[in-house]
Image (cartoon, rainbow, N blue to C red; front, side, top):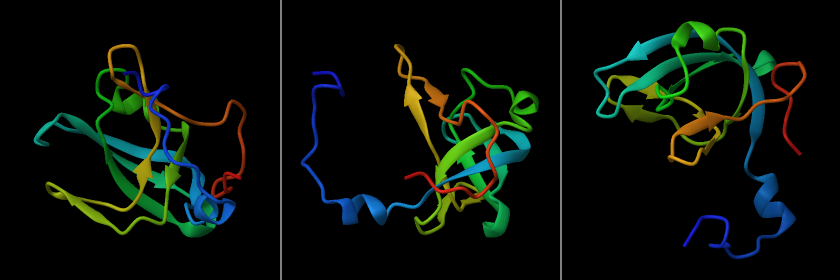
Length: 118
């Protein structure tokens, strides 16, 4: 069964409103080859929320250098999580391509960092 057909239970607006999804700009990115699954370490500027770190398994489609300046969406209100040696403070969002590899989500035009998804 594909993910598109596997609907999840309906939620109330208040459930959605508790998930804080913000836009930020990648200001630094480095390879993270020692991760269990190869990843890229990201530093993302969320404006008033400051700079947050993350580790993302996006090596199939992205090179660290090309990520600098790119705006991405991330969940910013999960508790920090230790991913190997990296303390991940946000969950950068993406969608799987046909092969299951992550494609990042971001605005199609520049927007102010820290803006919340509604």
